[in-house]
Length: 115
Image (cartoon, rainbow, N blue to C red; front, side, top):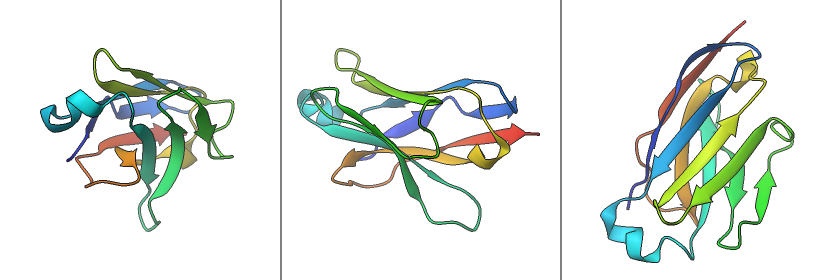
C-alpha cells in the first residue's frame, strides 16, 4: 500500500507550504485507526521522521520542526496534511507520507527552500 504525497514546490526561506497525502482505495476502509507519519529525505542523507499522528490525533514532532510544522488528518477525506511554516533552506528534501508501522513507500513530493 502506497500513500501519495503532493503539494511540494519552490519557496523562499520564511515561506509556507501545505503538503497533502491521499490514501489509496486499498486502505480507505481502515484509514481511521492508522497512525501516519510524514518523513523526508535530503540529498545524501537518510530518510527521517518529521511528524506523526495517531488515530486519536495525538501528534509528535522531530525537534527540528517543532513550532513550525503541523500535522493533521481528515478521516472523511482519507488524507493527512503537513503544514510547514517558517521554512528554512535546511528543510529542502523529498517529503513522503507513510503508515506507522511503515508500509511501502509511495511517491514523495519535492520541497525546495531558497535562501
